[in-house]
Length: 428
Picture 1: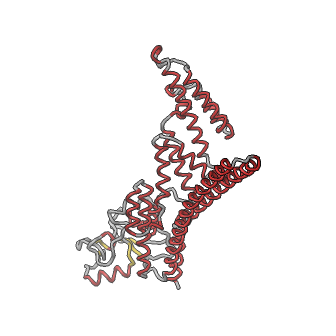
Picture 2: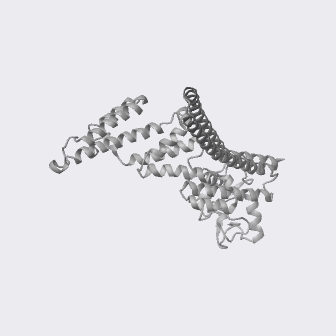
Picture 3: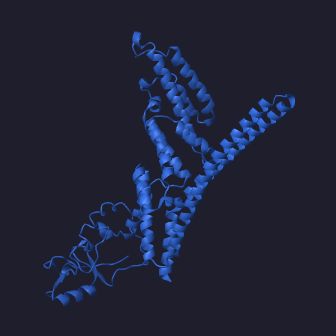
């Protein structure tokens, strides 16, 4: 019963960690349905209007050619709608297949009756491959992630295409190329972003305004730079002035409804301060680092929308595993007995190993609800704790000289201490 309860608890922990496994296809399927719904509504309105006008014109004119042309145009629109809906249907079928495979993946874990079952080892290997693919995708190695998923046969358990689209938008922002892709993404998820109070779209519109003002100042200067030089030249020239007019119109349309009057005041100040004036807080708005800020904000918004943790799932699983094994002895100033390769009484502790010891230094210790300290414990000068009875029996067995104590797992045979150096331990 205890083993079964442990398995159930382990399954619950996996479900908490693997929430994105089920949430991602659900969100993608919902977005796909909304796209189909919007496409049908738009096409229905257009076709109904065209059909009504064609019917009226057919009753007023005797020329059948015009009527046939209108009907042919409607048929072409309907065929185009059919092609688009077929594409969305194929995407929906793919998402349903992925969701079914993921449910079966979790059901396989639920069917495991014991953690020592070979089926659990097989399931764990699949899960490890999935976590590795997730890590590669987050780090931008999409081709390697796709190859790994294909070689392991887990394409339905990972979201390669979704992460590729995400990183395409992130890259366009981080490289300062354009806000168009990010704004298109915001338009597709407008209802969800508004419900969550996201500032992503506002920040993108603000960046558009900043670039317009920047171009206006630079265009105005370039028209007069040859005669007067760049410093001290006021904005002038038709091109520069036109850009500033467009920037004001843009701000009135997209920024005025934000309600953040302090930020709006700084944005208005950009019209008076140029990028090279280096006056705060306007220099910060002109700074290229804003593009990195927008890229990070997009990633955070994207991951929140799809219930993806900010860190790779591999890091979360590794942190949990390290914490479950870590004890204070793993980072003791004295050498741990479990790190002693010559010891025959203990196994090598993963946390004490040179590969994981430093990595586990900042994770919390394992939570123990029961004491595993031996009765009447004592501590040797090297920091190791043993039960006094166990220590006595060992030294009698190996023939240690009376009045001296040897460590049961010490690698050095001459590592002896006087009994007076052994101290009793009191557990609080």
